Length: 457
Ligand code: C2O
Ligand code: CU
Ligand code: CU
Image 1: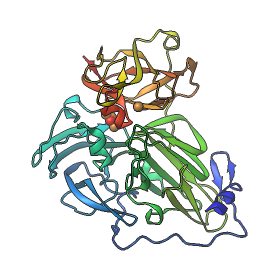
Image 2 (image 1 turned 45 degrees about the vertical axis):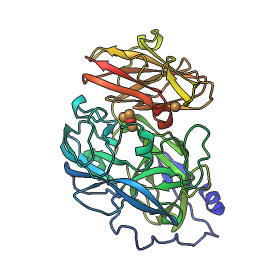
Image 3 (image 1 turned 135 degrees about the vertical axis):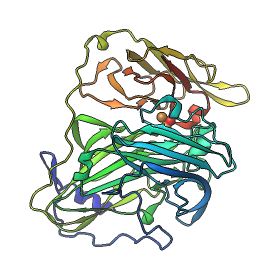
């Protein structure tokens, strides 16, 4: 594996396209093929799949093989299909579609569903709609904005349900996405098979991609002269993933929102809840198998199978949006809303995670006006020095400043990491009334109290 990464060093960036250079002593090992138990159809390769806005969603309890281990898990699946898709069955719809989804809870635990990142009417979003065992609930909403989203349980303890697999990707396709030769979802997670080594969070010891680890991970297959879109989603309840690519990739979307200025990189840090869409456009060279890896050696080795071809790089079908003018007053305005994130030992119940000194549901809530833009300051003042990826339901927000320094690029997010001792100011406008939650997406912290609500009217 090590030798392969050095090979990557010769890949050359040409404007926004990539040349994958040949290497004389290339490793010709082919990656292990998937064992027979894996589904024949890869539901995470969504290239050209039809929109499926009418869905019967089953919430089930089953087991899954990870490496040699069998783990009990929840699974979101559709239309009675009992195939264990390792990261749940992706929902794929086209922008503008009306999603009509009936969710049936076939487990013995009450649950609910939140459409993470989606702008849906408040009464169609899940945190307050409990689905008891054996019960069903109908949801209906329009997929207003294209992007990579996901849906997951929001029933506390959220950590337990999401950690055991109550999640799946939700992709709202843009017409331009049809221009990709490959459109693939990569759901990153970590499963705990041994002892918990996390300090105050449960961190898994086996890293998975679409529910598979190590040699079972399905390769990303790219052909020279073509262009691929990878939709990266971190479904982990606590672990940030630091992905390293062996070639340059171009980031086009953050949390489903298109970037005005896409950027080229080889490293992507993905906090729990976040999504990054990246493009790969290679050409020339020779056949190679490279690997995409994370920062530790716990199974996250994604083969990147390159088939040589193409005299030139494919053009990206992605058209960045026009910049949204930023009212400069927002950069100097004192925050309208402040959330200071903290922690403290609480009597008897371990760690308390706080917003403005209180634990949910005692946290201060905020009343905001529909359609008004607010400056919100998220400050990490915790004694336990760790990141808090803060997530807000119901809308995207724009990053204004980090520690008071303006952010040059226009970046819209629904989840933003606040580093220890730092603060981030965001501009946020709600266009749908109702009560929207805001919380840390390290779900141990959310369950431990770092959550509040924003009442929009
Ligand atoms: Cu993805 Cu309130 O969560
Ligand atoms: Cu959410
Ligand atoms: Cu946190």
